[in-house]
Image 1 (cartoon, rainbow, N blue to C red):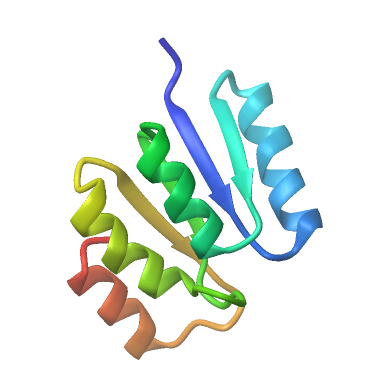
Image 2 (tube, one colour):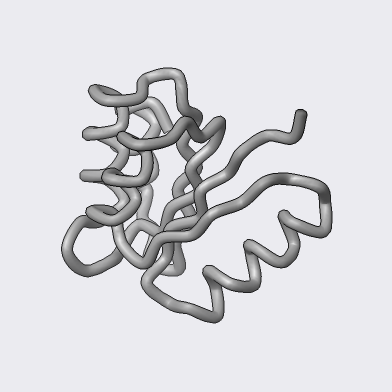
Length: 97
């Protein structure tokens, strides 16, 4: 059975590009435009991995990571960003990304 991956990014081109690549590799994928939408999806369905952007409207990737640790702790979280810093990377790792 293929891993189920949720791709979360407010930029549709990034979101759709990641979905296409992951689908071609045989993964089952879903997408969300922001963290709040992703959190609702994660509450309703099991995802093995969530790949999320760091900076998004409504709920950013760091907040999504924190909330997922409470609601779906078995899900692995990968944070991607074009706006990274050592502080945000350290914080994400500390929170379990």
